[in-house]
Length: 212
Image 1: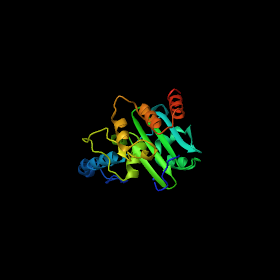
Image 2: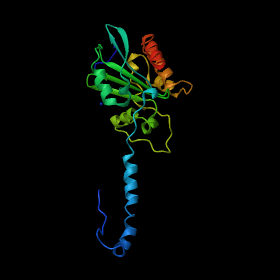
Image 3: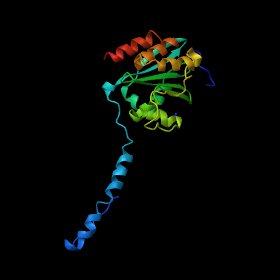
């Protein structure tokens, strides 16, 4: 894109097999004791999140510039569940100075990814979404941040609010857009695209994807 800065991802066996019922009656009561530990292990394993379903993904769009002209294209919706693969695909685009990836989920959460060579920036509109969506958790992991505790305030963005500051949208203005609860995540991204001069291409692509 024009304006990119060059300087700027136990198993166990039951005891007493073959013994009489009387001889194993006492340890039988203790066999239930490991259940609590097993339940704890199951809770721990539940950190895996289900992928967002196709109808929960508003769109995955990529934007870049060639010879100053903006181009916007849809990417596979499966990328809405995998930040690493999204970064790989953005690196393949022929932009003059890298590319931007935009993911919107259930019109409530968005992720922006900016890739310029080996330099990657990410922004998640709501840090609490990491408990619901794989790509949001990917962002938190990528940034090396700790997941929010249950009692922490929701709705706070995480990542680089100045991700497109050099393209015309300051970190302050980005924060103001995210804070506008009257806007869906789709509308937020369309407004962001407008500020960095990606419209009408971005708007058309976003509306077409949402209307599918």
